[in-house]
Length: 77
Image (cartoon, rainbow, N blue to C red; front, side, top):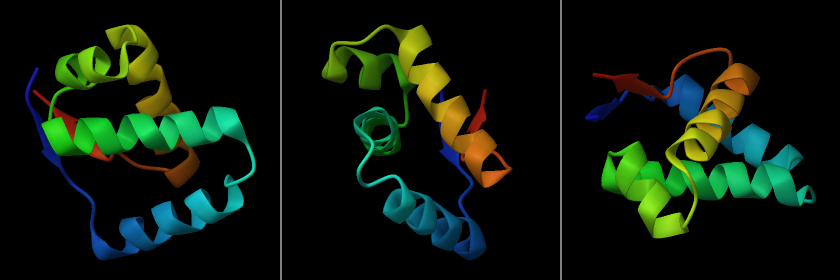
């Protein structure tokens, strides 16, 4: 699955706020770690391999971040 990043400046600001709020929660930090891996590879599959997680787990973590921000971070194609 190819991904396109669709962060706009406001969403990036919101993501940084979410990161700050979640800094003490290890589960949320793992979501941010997943986001970083997906961002770098532009692929949920490649990120899952890199993180030694299932694709479903990575996808759920990205969906959780998107729900927190109220919008998509990536366009799935």
